Image (cartoon, rainbow, N blue to C red; front, side, top):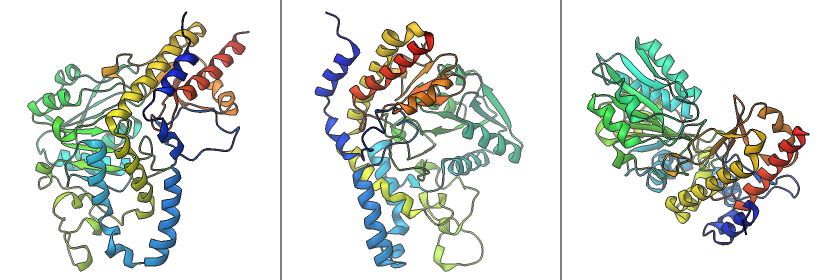
Amino acid sequence: MTVGPLDRAAALDAADPLAGHRSRFITPPAGELLSYLDGNSLGRPLEATAELVGEFIRKQWGGRLIRGWDESWLDWPLTLGDRLGAVALGASAGQTVIGDSTTVLLYKLARAAVDARPGRRTVVLDTDNFPTDRYVLEGVAAERGLRLEWIETDPAAGITAEQVAGVVGDDTALVLFSHVAYRSGWLADVAGINRVAHAAGALTLWDLCHSAGSVPIALDEWGVDLAVGCTYKYLNGGPGAPAFAYLRHELQGELRQPIQGWMGHRAAFEMGPGYEPAAGIRALLSGTPPILAMVPLHANLDMLADAGIEAVRAKSLLLTDLVLDIADEWLAPYGVEVAGPREAARRGGHVTLRRDGFQEFLEPLWDSGVIPDYRRPDGLRIGPAPLSTSFTEVCQGLTVLRDLLEKARR
């Protein structure tokens, strides 16, 4: 007898070693949420996060007041950065810092990188990268008189080492790509692309927004030069949570970021004339760190360390396997196509489904308590976060989508 998706989902839930983590998340009131499939855009909050934020406001901010800066807050961008590096990024201590937005950190690192390769006038990027990445590099190129070399990438796939090898050369200063493509979920060969870029003498900058906390990352092992990423997706840091930046040890004395603020100064509280950058990763700081916004990361890194990124990845692949199976069995008859990689080695944490007119299904899905993500043109991103999402929840959400497609066909 053929086992259907609902039965497969129930069996997977019964065998799920990470199932217990779902109870650690705040649950919306009954009837408001049936299936949350947008963990790749905004992660759900933990019960521990609400407790930590309240405790911080009452005891640390309210109790210690300005003394908190000297007692611990000033070091949070570095100490939390080191913890994030160890738990999720494969980065040894002293190379990761938390603060600013992804956009600001991209700008800092990109400007520092191209300035560190004087005489090289070309920056390589791909046409389907996230808009911020493209816009920031357009601005940096305009400021520094550089040329952008665009690699045309298939929106249903992503960048490859072979494509990069075809364009980098003696004039390339920097290449910038995403580890997991925001639209298709394509998982890039970071180490392979780094080898190609480094052979040409270029630096590499990687966007980790759609992989941090979902896919195992080995920045040190892969030879990554620079990286940035956000903490509000799979790391559950909350709306607008601060981003992180990685700068390889060997480059920290060579690269100089352009936003010279007091927190990146060698001696911030001397308030002296002239800017002297701090030693090490602290030099990437500019203004006062967003301490309150960092509080949720303490709880979320504890949870990720407890679960283990390899176990998270294993469940993520099972979840997206289920999405692919349902797409083939239930949704394909309604004109739905998978617009992304099917093979596990090239698949990140989400699956994009495409069908003409998908946008008109968003409102009825939301009204039914099913929340996917939409990306133009006509793409529904299904991004189940492994620590907060059950297999049955995925199946329930896609059941509603199937029913809506059937209703639209009548």
